[in-house]
Length: 426
Ligand SMILES: [Zn+2]
Image (cartoon, rainbow, N blue to C red; front, side, top):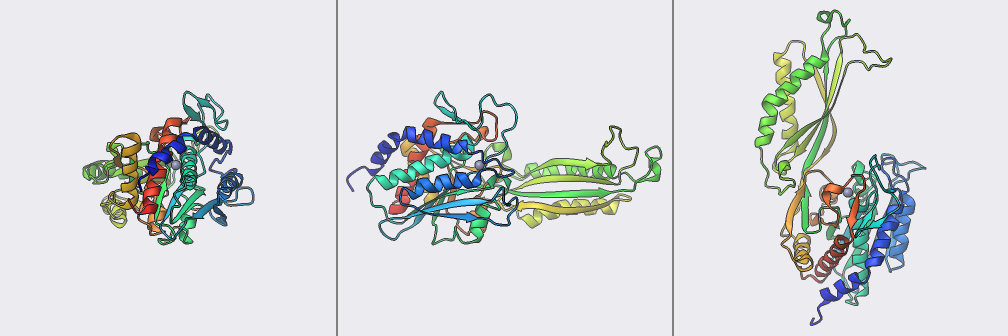
C-alpha cells in the first residue's frame, strides 16, 4: 500500500472536530447519573441511532434483574457491530455511559456541555463521554476512509460501571458478548491521559469486621464489655503488624500514582454504639462496632492469602484478648488484572501514540478498578486495555472537562490502532 492511510485518517478526523465536540455535548446532555441510573435508555438509543445510520447492526441489551434495575431505571446497554469486507478480527470500543453524582462546587451547568477555552465541560465530559465520542468518530472515520477493512468494528455503551458494572459489562461478559472469537481486541476509552496505555488495574477486597461486646449503663462500664475498645485493638494490630507489611510489598505493576505501587488498606468507615437519635448520646456501653476495610490487591498477591492475613490477625486477638468476639463478612471483591504490554492491542495503541502525539507512551496500571476485570475474568478476553482522552485527576470532580485537542488526538490514536489490528499489521 503506497498511500499513507493513517495520514488520510488523521486528516478526516481533523475535519470532524466540530462533529466530535457536538457529539460530546449531546452525550453530556443525558443526565445518566448513577445511582440511580437515570436516562440510560435515551442515551443508549441516541448512540444506537447514530451508529445504525452508519451501517452498524444495533442491539439493546436489558440487564433485567441486576442491581438497581426497575421500570423507572432500566439497565439498558447498547452494542453496535459492523462487519467489514472480509473475515477478520473484531476490534471493540467499550465505554460506560453512566456518570457519578454532580455534587457541590460546580460553576457551570453540569449537563449543558459548555465549550470554553478549548474544553468541553460537564459531568462525564472526562469520565468518559469524551472518550466515547472520540471512539465513535474514530470508527466512523475508519468506515469512511475507503480502506475496505476486514474484520468487524464494535462500539458498546454500557451502564453501571461506577457501581461495579453488574448491569453493564459484567452482564454482557457473562452472556458471551466478549467471548474470544466474537471479539478479539478491546479498547476502553477511560480517562487515563492521551499519551498513556493502561494495561490493567489492582484488585479490591472490601470486608466488614464486627466486634461484639455487652451492653451496660454508661456510668458502670465495668458491668459491660465495650465493642469499640475491641475494635481499637483490631486497629492497633493493623497499625503494628499489617500496615508495615503492606507498605513493604511492592508490585511490578506500573501503577500510577507511584504511591499505589504497593498493597494498600483503607479504613472506609467505622460505626460503633447507638446513634444520637434524640440529639443526646446514648448512655450505654456499645455492644457492637463495625468497620469496613478496603484492601487493594496486587497481581503478585492472591485473594485467599490477602483475606487469610486479616483473619489470622483477628484469630490471634481472639486467643489473646479477654472477651474478644468478632465476625468478618466479605462485601465485594475484584481480582487484579494486567494485559500483556506486548500484546496486539497495547502494541498497536502505543505505536499510534508515537505517531500521533510524537511521544514515547507510558504503560500504566490504574490504582482503582474499571470494567477490564469483567472482560478478562468473565469474558476470558485478555487483549484489553484502557486508553482515552480525559485527564485522570479530573474524573468525578466539579467542573469536570475534556480537552478538545486531546479528544481529536485520541480519536486518531484509536482509529490508527484499530486499523492496524484489523489489517493484522500491529
Ligand atoms: Zn470511568
